[in-house]
Every structure is written in C-alpha cells, then in structure tokens.
Length: 212
Ligand code: PRP
Image (cartoon, rainbow, N blue to C red; front, side):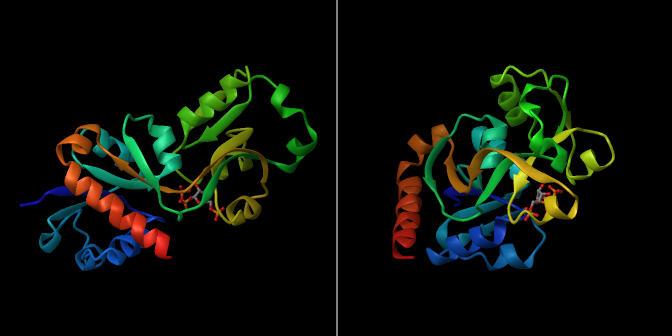
C-alpha cells in the first residue's frame, strides 16, 4: 500500500531532489531510468509523481500529492494554501526585474505603461501594483529574455541563476524581487491524516541536512 505521495518538480531541481531523497534511504532508481510520471518505491511505501514545477503546488494543494518538492518561485507564483515545513538549501536563484542596460540610468520605477514579459504573472503583478505602477503583464511560457530583444516588452520578471542567459541576451539585473530555493510543501489534510509519515519524512530530511 502506498502511504505517501511525493510530487517532484521536473527540470533543474530534479537531480538534487533525487539526491536528497536517496540520502534518506529512498529508492529513486526508477525515477532516473524511466519517462513514467508515476513511480512506486514499494519498499518505502512511497509513490513519486513527476510534474512541471509550476504544477507541483497545485497537486499538493488538491491532495493528489501529500508532499511536494518545488522552488519557492513556483510556490509564490501559484499562491496555494499549503504547509511549508522545511527549506532544502539547493536550487538557489533569484526572481529579478531585468531589462536593457539603458534602464539602469532611468527612473524606470516612475514610468507608467511598461510592458512586462514573464512566466510569473502573479508575482509581477504584485511587485508593480505594490509600487502603484500600472504595468501591463504579458505572460509567456519560456525564453522570456527574447521579449525585450524584439520589442514585445520593456522589462522582464524572471528567474536568474548564473546570470548567463541575461548577459547573452543583452539584459541586466534591475531589481531583486525575492530569493528562492527548493522547499518542502505539505497538503493541509495530509499533514493531519498522515502525521506520522509526514513527520518521519521531515525528520529524516532535517537530520541529513544537519549532517551535510
Ligand atoms: C530559466 C530562466 C532563465 C534562465 C536563467 O530558464 O527562465 O531563462 O533559466 O538561468 P541563468 O541565470 O543561469 O542563465 P530555463 O532554462 O529553466 O528555461 P525557460 O526559459 O524555458 O524557462
């Protein structure tokens, strides 16, 4: 019987999430070897669900997964109501406002009618409306750095890790919105109904993080 369903974000967090769960003794060989999206680790009564990062909070909020490992960037964007009992110390990046270098010397925060391309419309809306700016948010599904280059947008709100994508596309950092790292999230009902399983998982993760 599967006792705990864990949603893992595919993409840049996945390798480190696998390493973390392997370090607490779970078996994720099948996760690495298959393109299946539902994988059972029968020996530990765990089922892994592999989802797009932006979808992991939704699977957890609706209880399709009890627990999820996802970046705080996707978590903030989703706006879901879940527990967040542990940050995991990897997947560090920053949510940034970025644009062409000429904006560096401009009072861009005072401009109205800016067009902002982003995969984070909720975060971007909050950022600009908190400053009383009537920016137009244009949602794109990736390669956000393209938008200022071809005149689709004035600025972007996107994740920056090494900064090389910004640099390669002639953009610079203008303002940091928040820092993000991988985080453990837990469905509110599972937190109560599966308290032992969830607590055991959290304790194992905390122990291994203390040791490293
Ligand atoms: C992310 C993000 C940036 C890039 C930043 O894109 O959207 O484009 O990584 O990383 P860097 O600062 O190390 O260059 P990702 O590669 O995940 O693909 P996407 O553009 O389709 O989202």
